[in-house]
Image 1 (cartoon, one colour):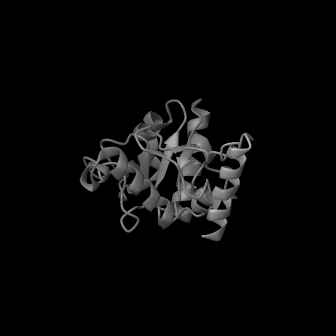
Image 2 (spheres, one colour; image 1 turned 60 degrees about the horizontal axis):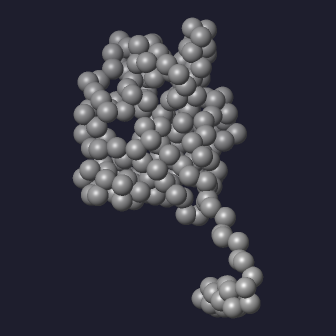
Length: 190
């Protein structure tokens, strides 16, 4: 509390003597691939929570980053194999979101509630930390021109399935032994 009061006092003193006080630096914005849920993280971007700065992407081989390195090993192998096959077809597959900490997932949900006006509306796009497959490293969101369509058409060969009808980019390791994906859920709320 003293630190805040001191900062206010310094700013007030600067204004009285006519000295301009520079604005506080802005944290980088994080957006989901669908650009519907923009998030101003607090604290600023933390690479340890699975967030990526300013809409960044990763390769499925960037295992040094927690968003990739904390994926379930079977999912990691599947998405790496799929990315390699997609590359052979001329499609570059990136990961826009992989593993997320529970705190980061909660921030996404809180921001979605603010954006959409209610928890029920937000839940169509963002799971709770307790239900999110991202939090346990069992989901990835893919990016790259045509990568989602390539994975929709070919993902089951690798066990990867699109899960939600309203999210072309969200994939989980969900194919059965015959390579069949489950029926699409309408959205994250089910």
